[in-house]
Length: 263
Image (tube, rainbow, N blue to C red; front, top):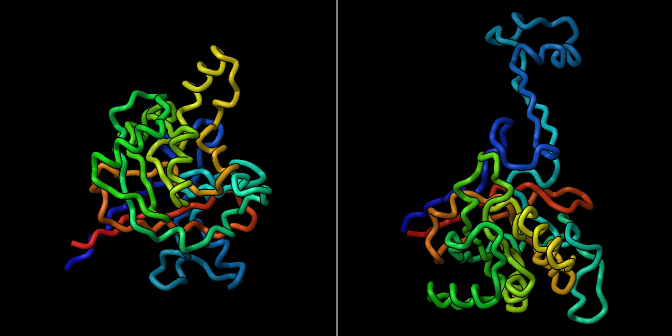
């Protein structure tokens, strides 16, 4: 038996559109020659030509970003101050450093919703039908990944507006069955805001805003956003590894999400 790894993470870079303009990451690259001043902090007077090889000190990068740039795992704290109201008295929502590691290395299942129109809100019935189609019996702690049309739109100017979203009832369908980590290749677990805004304007129903995220008020769960390469995965039979960066009190953490397939 061999083990195959499938990278499910996008590459963090300056020139590929993966976020709205106001929250895009910025990476400043320093060459070995650029960091000689840092070297001189520790070794005063040493010049680039005096270093081994004469090429200077160390390549390095300065990165400005939010915890929601790149492929990342959202904690329940991101959605609402409390969670688990369905079980009685709500409790404080956990932050990313409090997410159980046991949630983040589990069998995966992929739901293929690429055929749904941009802005479509996935229902409970849609999830049930897809699980039946692929012949998967959902188990507690399965990591459920949603393949949308956004997976192929990364880098396009309209990326944040592409793909379907998971609604309240679809999210609750998963979490009431014990799922605690989900994921999408779209910018958001919910339908793109541009489409939701039109519905809110037409109906006045603000409960439509972030309805999939806000399901975390009733059952706390995490979701991965801006996954990539989900098209390369089978419907099931793989393991997902998605341990988040440990940031004190944060709403999310960057992750190198990977699928592991035993063949």
